[in-house]
Image (cartoon, rainbow over all chains, first blue to last red):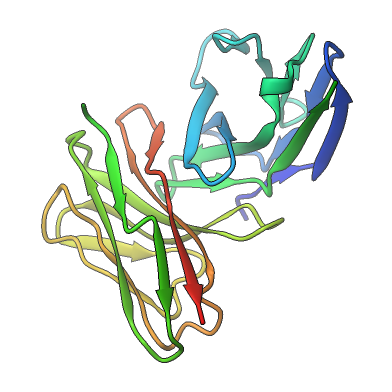
Length: 113
Length: 111
């Protein structure tokens, strides 16, 4: 079955520290991967995506994720977090078979001063 | 501006009542989706539609119904058969590049 697993439900971290949010997906010949961010009581905003090409993708606000096919992972990283990064982060996979975007359970990132 | 509009943002309903959540998009996207969000459970797919006049059940379709009579509109009805309807509901539409664009959500509370 197609699935996405986020390994941590909550990640507390101090400001300016590095962070990694982990995501694994079920293997497929054709899969596209995404990270979305959600602020309280709002919809989801796309943070970054992997469709093809370079396995390292970056966002405009310093986040990056690396597509690792052998480990079926798409972990999100940031070398130095800010208070404003506090939000819930969702990993998602689009499988061509079925036309559905499947989400992980979400990781709540809490950045403390 | 192009985007997805969900209404109402907040909605209260008595048990046994049906309620319809509106979702409108002006992005000219063919595919539209409804997700339900509960704390700690991520987003679960209720229904999706890849083209006008066609839609498919997602993982938790029981107690919900949809229609797709126009490309721009994909309303979701939460029926009285839905046992636990209190949740945050998110509508989205999809580009050809697989990316989903989301509305701001509708929070339904059953009293």
